[in-house]
Image (cartoon, rainbow, N blue to C red; front, side):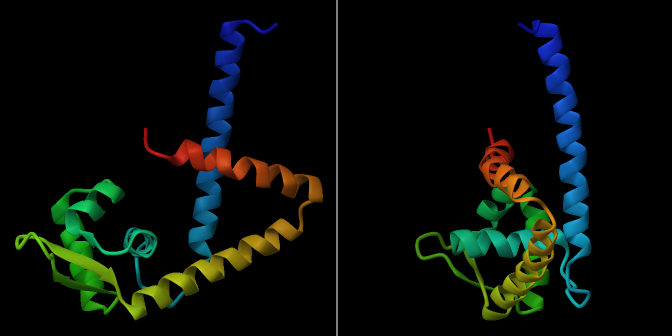
Length: 149
């Protein structure tokens, strides 16, 4: 039976390996974006949040993306100027506005996802069926690790 010290050392090593692998995969997925896509990954994350959750206030977007409200306001302004999002008054709180994904924003987001998914699907085809099955089982675990505490 392994000692607590050995388990801790092993978990620390696993943490380091996972961190490096996930960071490298993220960098590679970023590199696979369409060269004409002028949006930053942060701006794309905002489009993704709106796609998943529907209309959100600036404060809700800032909380979800873990940034300050003024920073999110700048991002939303930029996205609105580019026609990727639209704002409308909040129904019950006159101080708030709701931000919604526009058709252009949805098209940009889905095209970007499709391009990167296609790249990853090609890479997955190079793996053995056993490796793909292992990744299929690991994906929900990685998602749980990525969730907020």
